[in-house]
Amino acid sequence: MNVLGTGPSAVTTVALSGEIDIFSSAALRERLLGVLRGSSRLLVLDLSAVSFCDTSGLGVLVGIQRRARLMGITLALTGALPYMTQLLHTTGLDRRLPTLI
Image 1 (cartoon, rainbow, N blue to C red):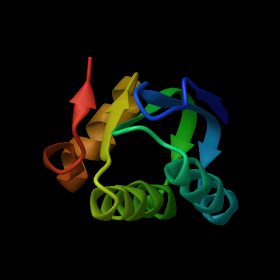
Image 2: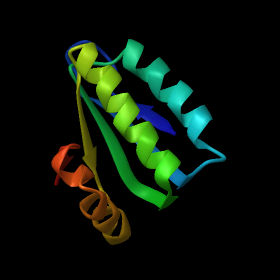
Image 3: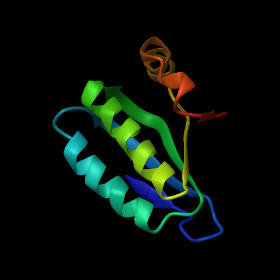
Image 4: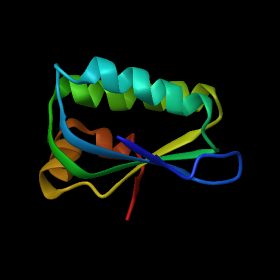
């Protein structure tokens, strides 16, 4: 996970990579919560290097979005590969998690 451009006026971008699954989701959740504490008004999760995501990974995305909203931060996704775009659509999360092109 790489964090780019943190600060009060900048967009905070987090580049995720690898698999987001039951084995990595707890650690990812903790790292993203840490990023939220120092985040700008917009937190963008770049999914372009995510090779796999299961339901626990989707749960992390939804949970971080909820926490971000409570903190006045907008969470958006970018760079989703076709399988991830389809997964978000199938689960209805494409209507809940905004996507930047």
